[in-house]
Image (cartoon, rainbow, N blue to C red; front, side, top):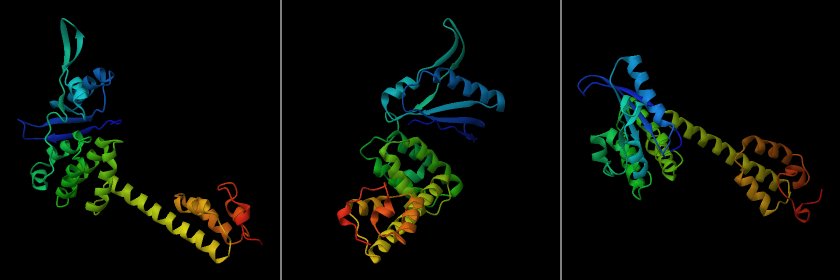
Length: 255
């Protein structure tokens, strides 16, 4: 997963309030032997509440490793023992039904993260995005972000971004805002690229297929702005693009 998720929540239906620390773990990490007990003892001391550490894994090997008790002290007399609760593809259900996801959004969230490599992950994420449509934003927002971070750099992460952009477009979570910002930048770049090619065509300046493809694929609005300004005055494609694109002199229209 690559990044750590720390989500601390007060829950009052487990014999009293406690702190839940959720961490996504993508692979074995010897450093957790020290950091996980530190999280637990620090939070317990600061808030004077019981602490439960939930570790979310996406493969059985990592889940087995994470489930081992972590001890601090002497072998014959451990001083602190930390036993994480581990969720992974081995013990989380595959939830592809919207009604089932609505019944338990927390479980559906764990299903989406732990089954990131499952062939049915698209259906899992779709069920979750639809289930969140009629969920209060205060509940949906942290779940949207938790899934996004939990999926990390896996291919399913892009699928989730697409679903958030379409199914949950009315939310104002950091992820949805990031997606909208990206869309606005892409839209401006596409429009500016069309302007560059239009100006060149109107002024009769020939360009190679390579340059046309370069302009169309460019996602840098500032670079496109520079090309557009040059296109209004230049006599050849070479004067517009300089060294950014290779230009076939034979295709450039004479002044």
